[in-house]
Image 1 (cartoon, rainbow, N blue to C red):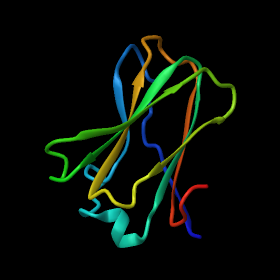
Image 2 (image 1 turned 60 degrees about the vertical axis):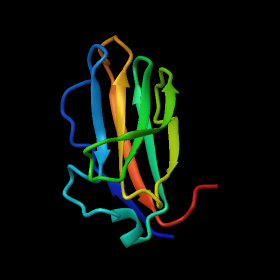
Image 3 (image 1 turned 90 degrees about the horizontal axis):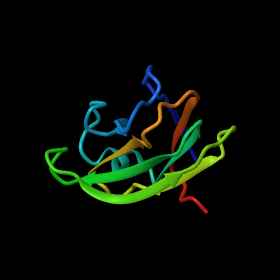
Length: 121
């Protein structure tokens, strides 16, 4: 199994009900079918947040011109990186993960992400 950490590049704490893209294969300059080319099967996100928020994942067949929602996961307040979500991404030509803040500005926000060649169990 190979695992690669993905850096979260956001600097501001999520505010209001704004949407923040945490990861995308389109904006990061990676080619179409990036996951398949590298044998990536899963994407993992671990989130520590001071207020409730939602993660939404999307897939695209046209390099991000249109996105189809794949999943929605509600996250609760956490004091550790215990909001862990696994995504099966190997079959998507392009994929992105967005955080939708719950309406209250986060006072604590930590995001850890990784790619893996192994299917999550």
